[in-house]
Amino acid sequence: MAFDGIVLNALSRELKKTLVGTKIDKVYQPEKDEICLKIRTRESNIKLVISSSASNPRVYIAKDYEKSNPKKAPVFCMTLRKYIQNGVITDVEQIGFERIMRISVESYDELREKTTKYLYIEIMGKHSNIILVSKNERKILDSIKRIPLSVSRVRQILPGMEYELPPGQDKINPLEGIDVDALTRRFEKSQQKINKAILSNILGVSPLISNEICYRLGIDVDLFAKDAYLYDVKRIADEVNGIFSKLDNDDVYPNMVIDTSRNKIVEFGVIELSQYKDCEVKSFDSISEVIENYYISKDKKERISQKSLNLRKNISIKLERLNNKIKKQMEELRESEKAEEFKIKGELITSYIYMIKQGMESVSLCNFYDDNNEVNVQLQKNLTPSENAQKYFKKYNKLKKANEELTKFISENTEEAEYLENILLAIENCENEVELKEIREELIREGYVRAYKIPKKNVKPVTEFKKYLSSNGNLIIVGKNNKQNDYLTLRLADNEDLWFHTKDIPGSHVVIKSAGKKVGEEEIFEAALLAAFFSKARLSSKVPVDYTLKKNVRKPSGAKPGLVIYDNNRTVYVTPSDEAIAKIRVLQDDKS
Image: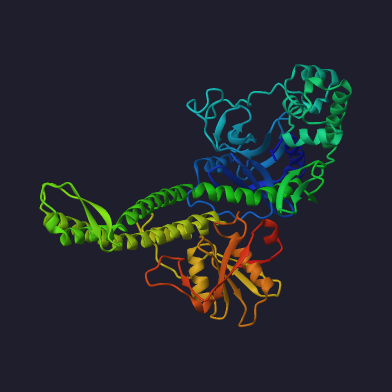
């Protein structure tokens, strides 16, 4: 869902009640586009998180926020510390009904005089920004994203410039009430369908809210606005006025819509979302709480994806080149398999040398290796029969040697390609920066990433395993990267534990810790589901998963991290899905 004007309006009111009169104790900037204000209240300390992320811009009071800070504070962070740290928040408000929040902070300047600074939070997708402005002069002191003329000709955001609000939108402000005649005139000129027309003409409304209005009124979203009856326009105006009347009276309903069949969060809002009748609705005590729950995992995944972009690109390029090399080597291998033909032709020339004279370009000879069927042998007319025979033998020896070398190279390159596939999968499974750092260090040691200093090899991973409890109460452990896989399989698992891996598909190592007890069919199915889910075949059906006792798994000498061989295995076929995985009980992650 878009962080629309309705959410921001309700949030501004909530923050105003909580923050006015509190003191900003500390200012942090853990991300290049995100700040955290540690605020002291009479009862406790709270953290106000403000993000101008292009994907997930937001502002909320956080309960669970443990991001580490850079050793050197960024320039914008230092500016905030200079002007608003130790200041008192005097107001929190929404500007107009736009997606702009303004926090007023009163603090002492260098001359010990009280001054007010405005912290503008613009929630506008990729144009989102956090801007510090002096109240009296309206000058920009700094912003988390500086926007020079080269980036935008419409609106520049630079220190020293006068702050101007973003260009206004030609829409009806719902806080002033929706006039039926004005809305009718707009609809008559519109070429859009009615839900789009609501979105385009009423300020602060997102696609979610415009669809909700149509759903509540039973209006077909495929109806064009210009074809709407006056009666429908009046109903739309009354519905919008009703929503905003409740908002004005602080009658809000912070909630999250969850699709339980897919175990996925669909939307969140501050009004009742009746259009999702087949989904579960979870209510919250505050708007900040619902925002934190909605964005916490989404933002984490987005940031990991951004920070791993160069690494993924580097590995993908190497993998593509390697696959092309394997393809060419396979073609050469197929060519080398013709070696026997050259050997036979050399022997036939030698056997029938009395029939061949220099200057002949070809000769038909009886192939005594193939029931005396005639075979046409090409000759070089400038060579003697003996020299032609030697040429065929030379070609035979060359192809025979090439066949042996190519077989070896293809095996090595295929193993390397499998390793790189596993690396890409491990990056995809990353849940935090520590895991990403662990993968990067492995790639440095393996020579895939350049670095000034090669990190020390530590057998035990510092990152956390995924842990589940089987239906019979046995522990199921899933490795998320090569280091975890090696440690899990070679150190943590006992000989009588069951070990799982997708058959010929890059994926995680999975172990059922059974303590020598018999493992049931249902538990085997659960572990196989996890192995398939944390593999490259996550979206496939009937995925083959091999399983065997851990004592049958071994690592060849010199093999790359995460690569093992096994025997005495059985295979089970499973179809992984979010719903199936959600039924397996998750245990608290652990490092060992």
